[in-house]
Structure formats: C-alpha cells, structure tokens
Image (cartoon, rainbow, N blue to C red; front, side, top):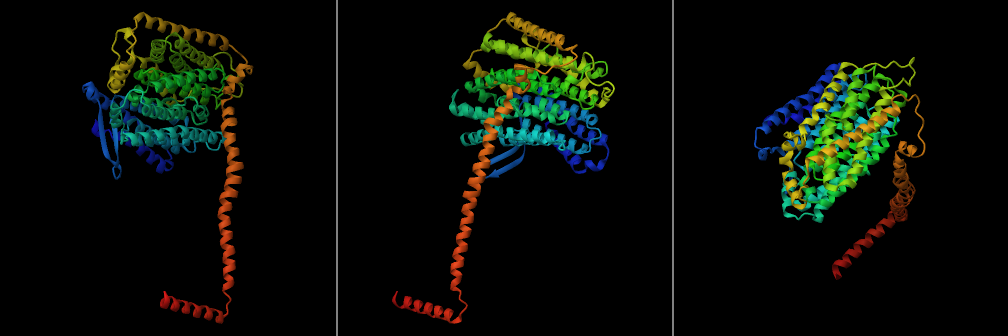
Length: 637
C-alpha cells in the first residue's frame, strides 16, 4: 500500500479545495459533510492497510522513506519532499484520521444550519492535511510547514465565529503565544543545519553518533525543540492559549485541542527520542516542566464552571502526563497515553458539545443538573470517558496512566510518586465534579424556558464509537504484570531502539518485582475511587453553587497568570512600543531623519534655484567662462 500512500495527505487537501472553492455553491450540507468526512476516513483505511503491510515485515525493516520529489534546491542545499513511514508515523496517522473522521461526522450535526458550513469543513480538511504532513515528514522544514499549518488552521477555527469579539481575541492569543515556541523550533533547525549539514530527521539522528552523551550542542538543540513543543502542546509557561481556544466550535476543541495538534510536541520529542536520550539534562527539564504543568492546571480545573474550560485544563494536565513519560525515557508510554487520551478526551469534548447543543448553547455547569434522564446516550458515553480519564480499570486511561505512575516511581521513588498520584487524584475529582453538576441532582436551569434533548444520530454515533474505544483502547498496551504480549510496546520498539540502548548505557534499567507494580496499581485506583466518591458526594445533590472564596477564588481566576503576564510582559511591551518606539524612535528619530533630509534638500534647492536668473546674458557669460576654463585645462594641464 505504500505505492498509494500519497493519497493519505492528498485526499484531505482535495477535500479542502472542493469545499473551499465550490462548497458554498453545493447548497447541500450532507454532501459537503460526506465529502469532507470521506476525505479523512479513506486515508484511515489506507493507513490500516499500510500498517498490516509493515507488520508482515521483520521489526528492523519497518521503516520506509518515500521520496516524492525534490522540493528545494539551491547550490549545495537540497530538501526532498519525503515521508517517513514507520510504526510511529503510522500510529499517529491512525489517530489523526481515525478520530478525525469521527469528529468530521459529528460536525455534520453540530454545525447544521451554520451560514459558513462549507468553509468550516474546508478548514477541518486543511488542518488534517497539515497535521499529516507534520507526522509523516522526514524533513525538519516539511515538519515545520505542517507545524505552522496546524497553527494557522487553529487560528482560523478558533476565530470561526468572528462576529463574537472574544473568539477573535482567543485566536490572536493562540497565534501569538505559539509563535514564541515556534521561534525556538526555528533556531533549533538552524543549529541542526549548521552542525549536521542536513534537515532530514533520519540523517540528523544518524549524525548524533559522532557526539558524546551530554554534549552542550545537543542539549541546546533539545531544549530549543522542547520550547517549540511547550508552545504547541501547551506546557508551562506557554499553556495560557489553550483554555481560551475553547471559544471555537466544540468539534474544533475535540479535533485540534484534544486529539491532534496539541499532541504535536509530544510526537516530535518522541520522534527525536535519540537526541533527548543523549541529553539527560533536557529529559529532566521535560519531566519537571510536565509535572508542574500537570499539577497546576489540574488544580485550576477544580474551580472552573465552563464545561469546556474544565476539559481544556484537563487536556493541559494530561499533556503533562505524556511529557512526564517522555521525561523518564518511557517514550512508548508517552505515545500510549497520547492514543488513549485521544479516545476519551475527544469523547468528552464531543459529549460536552452534545450537552451544549441540548442546553441551547449553555456552557455553565452550575446552570445544568439532572440531564442524565434527558440525554441518556450523552450521559452514558460521557460517564465512560470520565471513568477512563480518572484511571478506573479496565478502561483505556487506567493502563496508560498506571504505566506513567509506575515508571515515575521506578525512576524517582516515593518523593515524585506522591505528586504524580496527587495529580491523578485531582483528575478524578474535577471530572466527577463536572459529571455530578451536569447530569445529577435537580435542574438548576429554568425548566419552563429550557427543554434539554438528546442530540441527533450524527452526533451520538461518534460518541458511542469513541466510548467503545475508551473501554478497549488500553488493551493494546497491557503491562508485563498480566503476562500478555504488549502489542504497542513491541510495535514501537524499533523506533525507540537506539534511544533505549543509550538510556540503558547511562542508567541501567531499574529492577522491580511484580508485587511493586501491583501495589502502585492498587494505590492509584484507590486514590481515583476516593476522589470520585468525594466529588460525587459533594456535588451530586447540590442545589446552588456559591462563589468560591480565599484560595478557591485564586483557582477560579487561574492563579491570575494571565493578569501577571499582562502586567509583567504585555503592558510594558505595549507602553514601550507606544511611548518610546512610536512617539520617540519612530516619529522623532526615524521620521525626523527622513523629514530632515527632505527639508535639507528643499533648502539647498531653494538656494540653488537663485542661480537660474532667467537673463540670457548671464547664461552666455557662464558658458563662455566654462569654455575658457576648458581651453586653459587642455593647454596647461
């Protein structure tokens, strides 16, 4: 199937062109939605066939570089438009196209009647095209093209309902904050090209063999790439854009800000795993940043009342868990949690969209309650997603999160295990606070004005499929504890083989007993169950939500991080730009210099024009004098 693999990114591009150019003329929402969904689902099928082809090969041969054409050629500099087809890229494509096609299907019902229906689906297809280029590219510059492409599409989709002022502000915030991380990514690319004379990822990783572990150059490149990852994957200090991005339509939140774009940083660190294995300091930085991100955003989620904001901070926290796995060198575990998170978080976002749809655009969970009997499919699927993210066995989140918790214990011991368990417990608590306030208790809305109802089948079918995946998805990565083959680890091992060997040489694998893993597993489940119980007991029958006070007010206002950034960075930059760069440097210095030259030339011209008297005798005298001077020059000089 590799001969037809070019269709995988090409079909979404075709879908974008069709809906972007003639979609508004089709006047048929089902046709527009079908074209767009098929443009993502067919690549999913092709990728499944490609995966089966790779599985038929020996593990060491499951790497195919397909070079389509020479993209850039200037002197000795050459960049090919080539794709790297291996277990990691195929896994990412399956997630992007599989979950993406379900979200496209859901969007047909959710966006029904929107005046820019075709434009929305065109943007979704363009996003899928950019994301596929990002995860398939073998060239850093092609990866960066996809990297910037998903950022651009995110800007379009967050601000899709541009008539609302706050959506435009959220889109600009996302765009600007991501540029900070992208700057780090670009500088890292320059370092790679300067020192390795290539921009191809595979050749760059091969060139690492000439360097020692801990080399300062490799550390610099690794940290700069991680800066780019903190922007795309919303880690401290660049996480502030993602919660505001919930201003976009809910399918956008599910596709871009839960299952695909925000995992780009996780994917890239995993793709360059050997670089990070040779930079132990960078791995430690990743782990510390990830742990802090997970804890801080989980506490913020405790006091959020917007159903999508709770899920947004949950996403940032879960991305922290993924980076924690990468930071301890458990690269396949990070990808494992990326996959399971795509299932249950897409389910939760789409479920929240179903709730918002049924509640006639109400998003405040304090104004909901008692919806479980009115929206049964949404309630059941949402509950499954919440149990999965809480880490309740045997749902998918249990296996991936338990692997992260146990590996953290093996690498750092009890001092790190406790905050990781605490973050996991907070996840269970804030999720079931939201479930209790949304679906249980008595209605806290006007029952005479609002009549909640179940969503149409185009919206509930994806919920059911994602709920099933959230239940069974974890079985692809069963730990050794169960004595069964770990399919995902075996599948991804060839990609991370060199990194694992390097890490093993630096830090020999920690020996452990099955009993240790079993104890950690039981403790993590007990923590989750206690958190669920406490949240349900406190919020399931509450009739009125009081405004938080004290530290709760701080959490509700997100530690005032936006306000701190505004006071410490944005306002000083704005005032400096206005009062110095504009009023002094621009107007007085630059404009003064340019206008001064103009005045000087004008004054000289005014003086010189006095020579032009208009009297012919004066002109004749000057001409004769000139002739005499020329003769004298020729005679004597």
